Image (cartoon, rainbow, N blue to C red):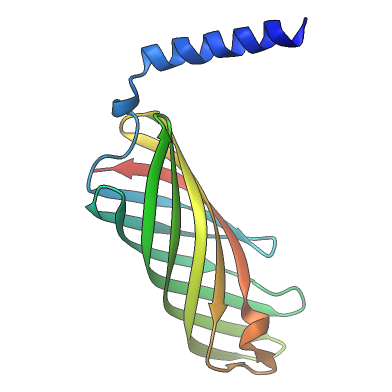
Length: 175
């Protein structure tokens, strides 16, 4: 099959899909989006959720709470983060929303191996994400965040070693 024929078929399917599903019915135009989900950080799976509150159509605040069981490769160190973020949300297509988020909060780091110790540290984070809306009342959210604890560390692990890169996936439910 020629490339131009494939392109025409893809464009035809896109136009049919767009005609069936009206664009204004698919994105989060509501004032609150809750997203329970799972996260992956340093090869370990955690869980948590996000709540996004819009105070104008494309801008809002987000609360992000997540627990990850291990964030380092040579120790047993769990991480729980609670952050408040500002986010900027755009809808380039009817079925897709993109956002940037950044802010700060607290992180509870619990070291259980090689010895037991815990620390509560300030945490800054920023990231970007996307929500795919297969329907008006449910979406699939994926985001990537970078977390940077400050103010010391925990028993031989300076705060720079506690930096994490986290992928999050969940089901977005607008209200």
